[in-house]
Amino acid sequence: MRHCTPLKLTFLIFRMGITTPVLPMFLRGNCDAQGKSDAFLEKYGYLSDQGPSRPSSKRFSNAIREFQWVSQLPVSGVLDPATLRQMMQPRCGVADTDSQMPWTERVSALFAGRRAKMRRKKRFARQGNKWYKRHLAYRLVNWPQHLPEPAVRGAVRAAFQLWSNVSALEFWEAPAAGPADIRLAFFQGDHNDGLSNAFDGPGGALAHAFLPRRGEAHFDRDERWSLSRRRGRNLFVVLAHEIGHTLGLTHSAAPRALMAPYYKRLGRDALLSWDDVLAVQSLYGKPQGGSVATQLPGKLFTDFEAWDPLRLQGRRPETRGPKYCHSSFDAITVDGQQRLYVFQGNQFWEVTADGNVSEPRPLRERWAGLPPHIEAAAVSLEDGDFYFFKGSRCWRFQGPKLVWGSPQLCREGGLPRHPDAAFFFPPLHRLVLFKGTRYYVLARGGLQVEPYYPRGLQDWGGVPEEVSGVLPRPDGSIIFFRDDRYWRLDQAKLQTITSGRWATELPWMGCWHANSGGTLF
View 1 (cartoon, one colour):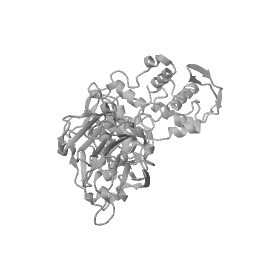
View 2 (cartoon, helix red, strand yellow; view 1 turned 60 degrees about the vertical axis):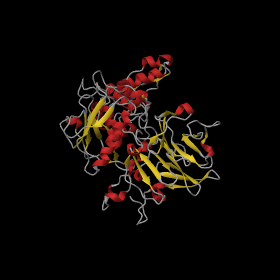
View 3 (cartoon, one colour; view 1 turned 135 degrees about the vertical axis):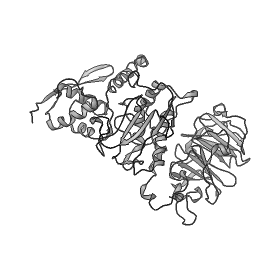
């Protein structure tokens, strides 16, 4: 082993547009650690492949600084234990080349006041590395053997939808015999992408992708893939990240960005950061039709978390119950006969008062012209009309007939965009809408907000923000839903009295087996 001499390091930080020297730091070089990190830094674009076979101390420390900057670590240029641990973490196999400089310039622009907009740089690949069309076909070539094909296809579809929601792009799955712009495939070891791209089993590089217009993303077939955030490696997040590369996006140094080199964790915050959205819109523009970009929080993907291979063993598929029992729903409402209507995507289910649930039916079969993924629904218990809300539009149906003849603009009556939930409040004989920390009471027979509203959610004691549905019950209580939980509110006191998990504790939701008395899943 050659001798490693102490290395004197001086680095600069950018603060308010002024470069400030920081006190020198010293490191007794560890040859073993540096030897292990050389290959990592070169593979992911921090060490140039030009020059001597072994990098100089200066080149090595500069590469360490760049890696620490992108990885949100203290920038020291020192191969300290925290930096070495970060290098050993599973990550994307795409090099970080061309990612650091645009990010540095963008951060610098934030300190430049009015010149910020002029100096912002687009964080995407070089000229030519983009698609010159807005409609792209994809194909899932294969999938991990221990994951069910329908679940993987659902995750792929949702991952593409994530990007189309915030850009002018549209995606569809290509037929088996047709051409596809983007192909997703799982491989083992060396798969003819070069030895530097060979997969190495669990850990290490989990996947890599190629920029347009090759349009391919490869995933390590030996990885412990899962569709849960609590065990294994979450496939949905990795899919969404690698699809971003196939669209032309490089890695981001933004905190909590989906396109960061180390894969994002599912949580309550939006899956795409502001940097992700700006980057894809710089390439392909905003959503068509003037619609607002729709951000999706990680909490919406609990459907993927619900898949459990142990639960499938020895169970017949029909005993698993309706899909909404294993995930979240878009909206829910109830009519005067206590029949529930549960909405998810382009389908809905009817649940009778005793908990018997129908097969899923297309929305257009009952309400022609109603778009998928509605955000709130309510039935007037006075006349039986259905009210639907999505974005800035509202629909009113009397049976299958659209009362107003066309969707209405909700904001003209003072209603919020993208409401969380709606329901008919019997004491007031009015529709009530919820949005974030506020609620709105609507005038009878129309879409005009009553005077003195909106008001704060504290009026409904103990109800959480961002509810996904609200139902009045025959016993006078009101049920509020969010994700997989519910809160029961005393209508007289306007105070929550109990809470729990609706799929396992509320038989009338259609998730219970009538004979066994237990849940269907």
